[in-house]
Image 1 (tube, rainbow, N blue to C red):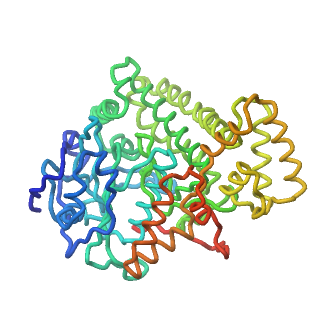
Image 2: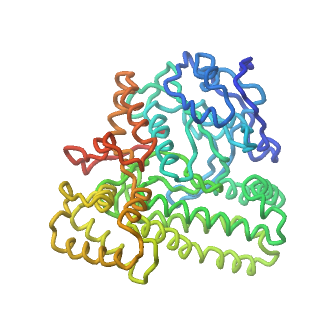
Image 3: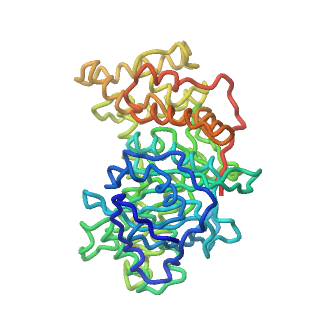
Length: 489
């Protein structure tokens, strides 16, 4: 690949390339025929210290397609291995390349990765490419998650490649440029534990500590503290997912980031009618990663992470196992704390009462019983507007409302303060599945990106509760219980 000569603000390093060679393979992207930039995140580019005017161009498209390499980049594919639907496999970046780490004006280190950039040694028979639909889906959902205040990887750009790829049908190819605190995964540690030495594992752990947890990197018990910090971040993250009805869809260990960010938006979607058994992913036929299972799967994944650290936790294996078990046992308690705190805020509570959890669970049961929309039920509570809700005038829900109002009356907050708390905790809009599909269909079939841009604009401030957002809060005119999402690999 040719070196780009643009004054685009690149300030790239690649500390990951200084890890032992077994953790990655150095290689360039596979050039594409005629890259075209179809969406570019100017605000994100500016925060990274990049020159948006320079990169929002044909020259920028060449970089985001992998046809040119920015100054300072050291492209590589990362190796990892992990559990997919409970089965352990050798994995790795089969269609992605880490260009390097952009050092931002604030001194932050952010991975710049191309997704869909061609085959690597870890492709396992795949073509290394991606279709435009899944890449735009990741762009939309990841940016929506950022606006919702949920830790996430970000999307900088999507380019079409001028080449078609074969999935279920022939589809336009595309490449996503993803930004993350890092792409170190639970599966990265599983790879090190399975195929590396203890020193390799220690090197990876020390690197990750310095990068994500520098405040504990020098601690005497730093590996235990490391495990505890990862558990804490994941507990907080999954609680946030649950609070907005987000379903990741494929919570394999290679899709859990050590940084605590949401990563790898494949068959993800947001729940409409509340049902803990909700699954959208076409490949999750057993419901392993259903909405209600996400906290349990997170705990399972973290147990696999803890197993990788056993040699670092204690020289005696039995002692190490006990230390790891004690740490993992706290996940459920921590998750419950974050979830309960978030749900209290959604209901306007500023104080804590022992009966709060019962009140919350009773509401969820009523939502499930009456097939009430999850997001819109909380909006209706916020503004006391029930005309379009299946809960309206249901006797059992009316009784619940009286209990909720009595609970609020025991706080000293004004009605205005309660509503403001609820507005800040309950989004007016989420990326509704029918809206996302509409945007993807127009982009893929008609090369019309205006619907997607409008959707992204509405999702930028989900707690604004504007009149424009009401249209995007509306449910589809016809419900499709068979709606499925696809990984797009």
